[in-house]
Amino acid sequence: MPTSSPTLCGSISIRPSQFGVTMHNAGYKALGLPYVYVAFGTEDTRAAVEAVRSLGIRGLGVSMPHKIEIMQYLDALDDTAREIGAVNTVVNDDGHLTGYNTDWVGAIHAIEEHTEVAGTRSIVVGAGGAARAIVYGLVKRGSQVTVLNRTASKGEALALEFGARFGGGVEALGAIPEADILVNATAVGFHAPDQSLIPSPVLRPGRVVLDVVFVPPESRLIREAEARGCVAIRGTRMLVHQAAHQFELYTGQRAPFEVMEGAILAKIAQMT
Ligand SMILES: NC(=O)c1ccc[n+]([C@@H]2O[C@H](COP(=O)([O-])OP(=O)(O)OC[C@H]3O[C@@H](n4cnc5c(N)ncnc54)[C@H](OP(=O)(O)O)[C@@H]3O)[C@@H](O)[C@H]2O)c1
Image (cartoon, rainbow, N blue to C red):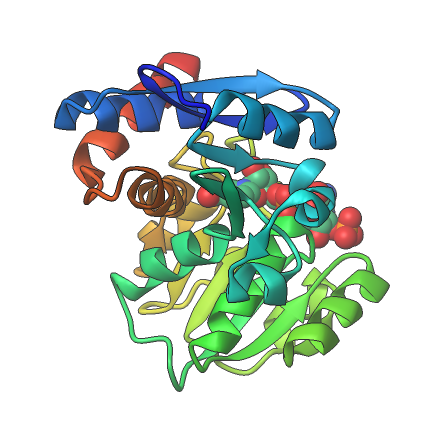
């Protein structure tokens, strides 16, 4: 059976980023594990899966555009990955490759640190990959979800697929009755600290607001939500929760969450 020393984990995307490298390696170091994590840039999904098998790579984080194509090359899919229709994590158990999706876990764990999701009403702005995982998770946990999206056809399709309701474009936000949870699942605000799609009057005190944007962690939406008395959840919290879940799948050890979070916050601070 192929193996490596130290145990190799990594990620594939078109352009490798340092986010996973930073969080996972900090976690391995903190626990003294003989593991190392490397980010690979590749466009060839099938060949990457062959490399996982032939080199004995233990775990693989999967970013776009590989998340859907990779499903056909794996030996098994976790139920949630199958239901979401995308894989962001592969675990190699002695040559048997299973696909998981930890994106929804990251968002839901970050929200559940602040509120019960069952019985809530929530609004998700966006209908891309991040929105898909979040809508799935909120519906699965028993929230009544309304999706808003600039492109109506995409918003309608997402809502229909997961048992949510489509409420129109972002301009419909003001017209939507009280919601307990509001999520920005678009890239608006990413590397753009002055931009937010969410008008501040919508940010009512007590409302739970999650911004998926994590660079900068204090996005305009987060700053305005905090100023208006909302419970504001930074995108970094979601990011670390999903990485912590991957860490546990790869190592079988409880992830050192604070160490991983401290490492990513320091890395982002260097970048911004
Ligand atoms: N914190 C985390 O753990 C985490 C995890 C995953 C992703 N993310 C972040 O989530 C963001 C979205 O990623 P994704 O993979 O979902 O992207 P995506 O699949 O490309 O989807 C982008 C979404 O944003 C909407 N959008 C983009 N620009 C817009 C604008 N100017 N006005 C209104 N709507 C706009 C798009 O609307 P249309 O359909 O109309 O184009 C679409 O719904 C990225 O910033 C990514 O870094 C964070």
